[in-house]
Length: 189
Length: 221
Image (cartoon, rainbow over the protein chains, first blue to last red):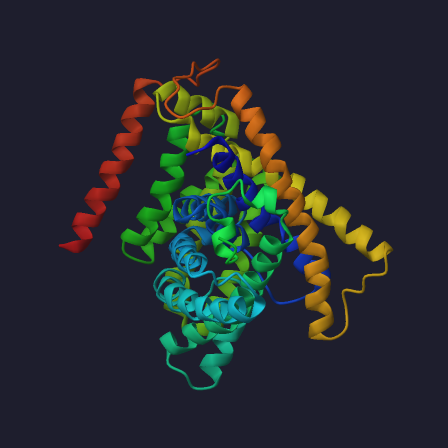
C-alpha cells in the first residue's frame, strides 16, 4: 500500500463522518455516511474502500455504539462501488444515480437482518419511525424492518453516488491520476 | 476504578466482552447483570463524560423498542443495547488513542491500523469545523439551503463539494508527513512510552475470552 493511499483512508473516513454538518444545514433526511467508502473505492480500489468502511464504522462506534454491527454494510458498499468503478458508472449522473439506487436496495437488504436480529429494528430515530409506520400499515415485523431500512437507504445512496461523481469530475486530472482507479471510474481511461 | 490506568487492550477486551455476554446470556437476567456492570463503569468516568451520554444515547432505543415490541421483548433487547452503549461510552471516555498506538507498536504489530484509527479520530473534528466554515461562507455568498428538494440538493452539492475536494488536497500533505516520519510498511518502530501490561491484566483478558466462549457453548447446548 502506497503512502498516499494510506493517507487517503483516514481522510475518506473523516469525510463520511463530517458531511453530517452539511446535511444538517440543508435539513435533508440523508446520512451520506458511506461517501468516504465509495470515494476511496473509486479512487484506489476495493481494499482501500473496505479499510475506509471499517475505520468509519469503528470511529462512528465511539460516537454511537449501535453503528458497529453495520460494518458489514460498509464492506458490501465498497465491493459494489468497486464494481461500479470498474464499469465506469461514475462517468455521469445518468449512470451514477441508477447505480446508487441499486446500492440502496442492496444496502437495505443487508442491513435489515442486522437491524432485526441485533436491535429489534430500533436503530436510529428516523428509521425506527418508518419501521413503526410499516408496522402500522400491516407489514410483518421483518417486512416493516425492511421498509424502514429501504426508505432511509434508497435515496441516500443515490445522492451519495451523485456526490462522489461530482467530486471525481471536479478533481484536477493531475490529482486524479495519482490514484490508481480514479480515471477508470469516470470512464477516462 | 476509572480504567485510565488499564492497558488499552484490557479496555478493548472489557468493552467487547460485556456486549458479547449481554447477547449470549439468557434475557433478561444476563442483560441486567451486564448492563449494571457497564453503567457502573460509565458512572466511574463521572456524570457529564460517562453516565449521562450513555443514558441519553440508550433512552431513545427504549422508547422505539416499546413502540415496536411488547414489554418482555423491550426489556430483553433494551438491556442488551444499554450494555453495548454504556460499554462503548466508557471506552470512548477512557481510551487515549496515543496509548493505543504505543501499545500496538510495543506489541510489534503493524502500526498502520492504529494510525488509521487515531488519524481518523483527529481528522473528524477538523473537517467538521471546516464544514461549518464552508456553510457560513456559502450563506454569506447568498446560498439558500431551504426551499424545494431540488434547491436543497443543489445547496448540499455547494456545501459538500468544497469540503471533500479540500480534504482530498490534504492527502498529499499527510502523505509527505508520513513519509518524513518513516511510516513505511514493514518498518520496525520503537515505542517511546509503552503502556505497562501486567500479568494480571493479561490473565484477565484471557479470562474474559474464556468466559465468552464458555457462555456461548453453554447456550448452544
